[in-house]
Length: 332
Ligand code: KG4
Ligand code: ZN
Image 1 (cartoon, helix red, strand yellow):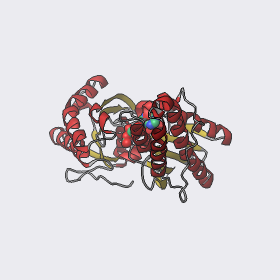
Image 2 (cartoon, helix red, strand yellow):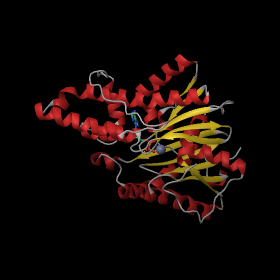
Image 3 (cartoon, protein in one colour):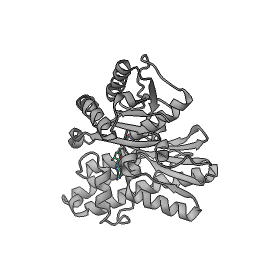
């Protein structure tokens, strides 16, 4: 089994991981606090943070894994999709490492890696597997049939994580607001504000309507009572979270029924949401499906999932070269 170093830099986490003999020996993740006040990731600031972090994170990943460069067989890195500047930093580092060590390069698709993160520690399922990948940039329903991944549906506008973050910003929360909404919602009443579940065609999603609805709702109530948000913060958080979770799972259930799938999982940053995990487990109990959830370090962006896909591609002999340019948009 190959020893792979994984490098992830598609958004605002700089991460390096080591996979050896099918086990993750280290998965170092440096997140970036600089975006907190802006309500979202500022691409140029993200690139600069990656530049600062990449070498120290790489060194710590090797040290924690207890290996040296000479123990490695290949370098897997995120080639896209993601923010172009941040992708350039990770891919350039990977290429430099490849030149200095002579190790082969393996470009990895970030969205494929989110889905396959489920099998870092679990064996591949024998049957078809349906994954809902919900992050700050994407919301996708993906069917894994053998080695093939098929995109069944996706958001036509904002991503689910983006809805958490943008609505969180309206509520006065720092970026990323998802984890804070999750925390506040634990003490809130999710039924207090009946926000709408936006319905779009087929297995696609839309979240921008919810964002606009909450914006006007808050504006109208703030006119009458300037401390409306303050007084209702926990209930607002719980209501927003409940609406997003229900929107996500309605389509997931529809997709699983349509494709007759019995193994379903959630991935991406939003998969760390406790209400989504609970609702998925209830949905699976109701239908007799097996639920796949992930520990938090494998939900949000991480290099372990990149190293894992790297190991699969290594066995397939699927390598890249120095000329490959990172792709901000890249379908699997
Ligand atoms: O996968 P990820 O780390 O980065 C992207 O590829 O986008 O996802 C980040 C997103 C952010 O929008 C963040 O608010 C959301 O995941 N997120 C959560 C939670 N933890 C992270 N959303 C809801 N509840 C959480 N516990
Ligand atoms: Zn991601």
